[in-house]
Image (tube, rainbow, N blue to C red; front, side, top):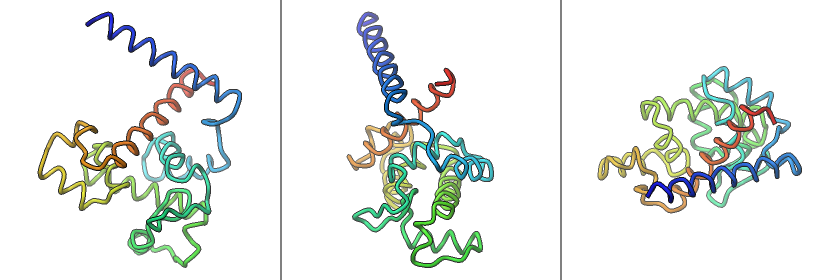
Amino acid sequence: MKKKTTILLCSALFFILCLILLDVKTGVFSKNIYDSLIAKYSSQYGIDPLLIKALMKKESNANPDAISFKGAVGLMQIMPKTAGEIANRLQTPLNENSLKDPEISVMFGAYYLKQLLAYYNGNLILALAAYNAGIGNVDGWTAQNTAVSKNISKIPFKETRRYIRGILFTYNVYKIREKIKI
């Protein structure tokens, strides 16, 4: 068993190193033009900027004009109904194009993630699941199976499992890059 674990660990580290080297060449995970907005709102809402950047990467691939097939809009892919609720709480004017404004999108996305983290007592898995699938779904899952809060594979929606794993993977790549200053 120890040998398998060592092989898996070495393979994972090799894979991450390859991604980092790929990024040096292609810029896949590198800085983007929204880093200053990410820094501003991550600081304002107390969220790791690398997490917001990873969320943005997964949600829109840093495309402010992105619109999902479900109707989520902008860099942070906020649903219009959720945006209306956030706008009321933040007392921010909102019109039909506001979510395509990078500043509004990052502000609302960071605020919403902060609210979800608070709602789920800092549980990142549940907060990200709710960002993707909605609070109602996540509350239903946790009521039926408390293991959902600690085990991504217990989440019933395949899309949400992939979503969370993708964000966490990108987030960890960003953290490794930050540590080794690439």
